[in-house]
View (cartoon, one colour):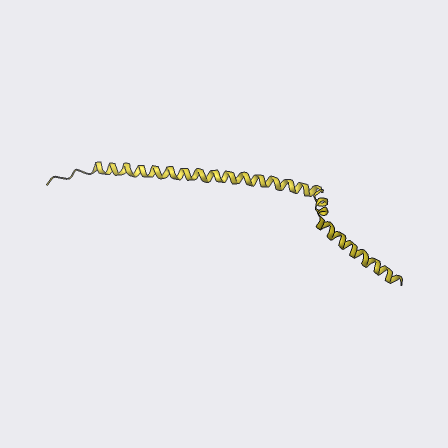
Length: 100
């Protein structure tokens, strides 16, 4: 009979422990308890720092892409001007056509 009581107490304790753990995790109290620990706060701080760094790098990348686009446009304009000047030089260097 004592064995049955011990087993019943162990089973009841296990069920209550599992139920309490599930309730703690689902209610948000477990999250608040876990956030209070130093390693979690450190990881959250480092995560925020990395997110800020990522955002800054994204802005820098956008600036570089915009600058590269402007440089491409300027290069295209220079190339067009070079071809125009080259065409003018070629036209000037050609001997005039002999009249017939």
